[in-house]
Image 1: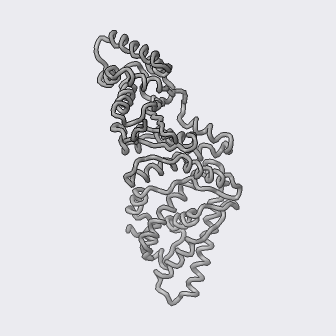
Image 2: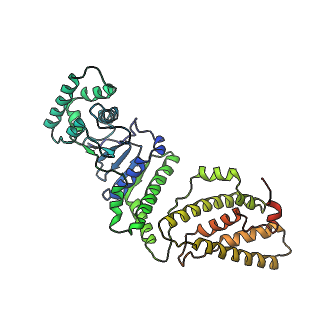
Length: 388
């Protein structure tokens, strides 16, 4: 029987932004799921895989850095179990759904492992009796008691439906390791972590965009893989430096704009549009991130950024000189806008390799921030010693 899939009460769309583990698992499933699948974040569970045939796999993710979420009376463990029982009871997920508990770094628990080892209704019944016998030996109720009772009070067929489809996943010392393995056969070793970071950022941004649009955070795995494969292919082209920096969030751009750094004040005195200032901030942030990531990965040589800056300063001087000759009758701020826009359109290689479209404009704005160049002909007089 097909059951309409609804958002489960315990999955809140907002809190995942503060957790590193969930986006990592989202990314892994987007790259590893079968054709036709979709993957969601904080919709039905921490992470869920929606298969093409309508079946589901719900995954709870737990960090075990400070405690063992698999201990027999772990509140985390029994809360996850109770949530799954409630979802089955309310027909919010179809029968036959799979349940996974992902714990990193590896930990053990007798009851969690016993549940993971069940495969038949008889096994499930034996597991329930094991839990009851261990409960009988407790001197006082544990903090997990409400969740434990939700499980024990459920009908036997519902207990079996959950227990027989449950598997414990607690083998990864680092949750990035499964992602690294997916990339290891086709990507140069120095690029693996950069590509993992990029993939996680891309996955997270897709969910963020859906949530901002007040839509469920459900991402098409086929489309994500196709996009990421194209990115890897570009990254592996010898003559191209690919950007590993995601487009900055609107809040990040707004926050930097509000501080009015020097490169923004340079644009203010030539009265460029707000859209141009927003683009300048975005390009500045992405370029700064790319410089750092390329250097860490050894993709660019020492001193190459300084050489590029010297080249851009020279080009800026030639452009300003030409504008002064051709447009001497124009107002100074108009000549400044012409200079900025001409420079923003330039492309220049780095170590003989093509760079992303935002990079040169980001470099120009960085040089403007350092006052090594400017757009208004009298920018030094107008800005030196200025506090805004």
